Image (cartoon, rainbow, N blue to C red; front, side, top):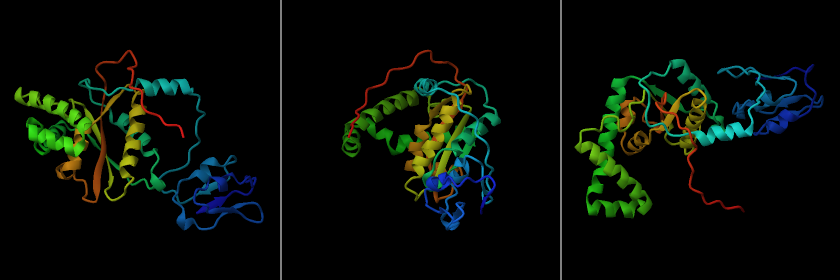
Length: 287
């Protein structure tokens, strides 16, 4: 339900401009009113944008509106933060406090979602036995459903035709790494790198935008992790295995209507990078 404090409302119409669904109009008294709140996706922009705090939404059952602090961070600081992000490969043997992960989750849930659906969910895995068992599952799927075939010329030719030469080159590097570690009995830690925590994002399998929603949520977590002194790395092997076999999702007790679309390792980095690493120049088209 939308309520308007008429003593505060100036009739500026900003809330109406901000309503993406066009559900608000000014009545004859220049007070905003809703035409049809049934179609509202509860984005909350009308309340958040009101300069006088005149609008109140009583149907937000999942939280309250809080005043935003003044943002004083310069663009240069944000740029340096983004450019300094690295994928952490070695973590300290130190657990991440639950409250720190909860802060990351909160940041993730404030990422944008298509039509403000907010359907995505998360699993935080800190139990070492669960991580060890999950690593074994991922290793088995990746090796037996894909990587082992790179050991033969026929398998490499098939994957070249299927995925292209660039992807084949990438997979060949993984094959050599896994083969070497497998022969030396050193596969333990190859997937999760002995991280103290893994955050998995999953959502509706039939929604074409769920993968994007999950990626946005995890990216929010990655960026917040940096000033918190945490390191992160995408658990790409877990995501790849989950896309090939349902074994991963079933192990984590994820419903069949849902898919895993992202996962990051989280922990305190053992080493801190001192320099920004140069990146390849990418193709940019201006139209």
